[in-house]
Image 1 (cartoon, rainbow, N blue to C red):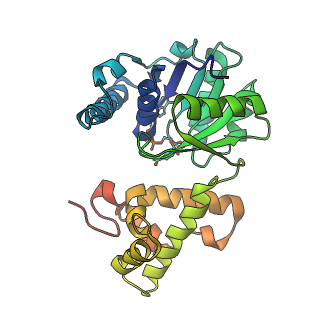
Image 2: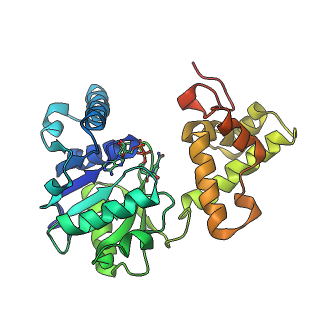
Length: 285
Ligand code: NAI
């Protein structure tokens, strides 16, 4: 079952793609990373190298240099021709992703290759049907930071074969050492479908003046043993991302619990996006 998944391609080397490339190379696999421009490729490589240096300093890996030797960096999708597993982690844009899957279908020569997407909200079916091999297209949804968080959601579309799902499971569990759960091809999968309404409820609670941000978060940390409160979590995810995921859930289910509260929308308009901009529900150095 684990044969034929040694050559991995990762498309997009941002936050998630660099993490996916890192865990693949750390698992001893041969990795080719594709970015859309040389500048983006350099930025992705720098992110990856920094993360590996940190892992080496903490004693989690013996040699960052040895891991880096297994990673090639290119800007031409044609260099994915010999890949057995390709994980797409480009911008969350349906047009960009469908165009990419059309190209992958053309350039990846192994007819059994797994074509995976790390999308958080785009239906896997939409990516499968633009290829001539939707049975090999599957959602493989990692969590940020990829080298740290264990979970991967496996998301077969209605057209994905059970063989592809089992090979994808063998890849993430057997090769990468992650833990997989199975989800249907529905917005939010399992984790975001539960987590986002919870975060939105906390924002509504704050918005209504019911409790302060600090007390809402302290309540969940000390009263429910959460590692961090929902508003601190929203700041970490990014308020723009939180809003975008809420909108995709609302679009799919039309349930009020998924509707982004006005306070969230106003904060995004104001550029108060959380940790990444230095201010969200809290202020950061
Ligand atoms: P990001 O913006 O950090 O990285 C995206 C990268 O893709 C950029 O470096 C960009 O240059 C590159 N790119 C864009 N179009 C490309 C193309 N046509 N070919 C090659 N490279 C291209 O985004 P991030 O956060 O890494 O997200 C990537 C995917 O992962 C999205 O689908 C997102 O929904 C998903 N995701 C994000 C999570 C998060 O916490 N940020 C968690 C789980 C999934």
